[in-house]
Image (cartoon, rainbow, N blue to C red; front, side, top):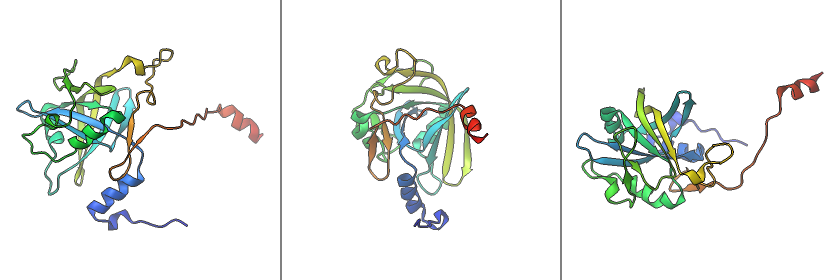
Length: 211
């Protein structure tokens, strides 16, 4: 028997923690951005996914800090209109968690998370050297009428991936070999385990069975 949960009856805190335990696993966008003084902000977001591939768009949902106060990442993206989405692997989990700490705006997470920066090639915001793959993004638009959340849509100007994680035959990215992490609820992450391959059948096979 299924239990009914009314999301509108939950407090903001309870809705958040229920939501992140329900909608999972989720990919993680470890976002680097620059403030107006050139200070690098690095913060993880897991309400993140692809939107389209032509153009190559990604979306990140960013909650405010409470009482309508925007997070540094959102302020920086609004100001600079560019940012990097750094994907993460299991060796980065601790540093990414440190980066989720609510540091003051004039303090960079990079001073504490143990990662190193390298220059981006198509935008001014640096990327994380340890990341297995990075999307250098420019701001496409922001949907800001979602209550305490803002939905940032970015267009990947360029993508950089470690060559060892690119399939030499297809040219596709290899997420398991890259050891990408997904986000669960609470403090939990997940790794890619067993992969189930189910090939699609042509529609003609199904239609033939109906005759």
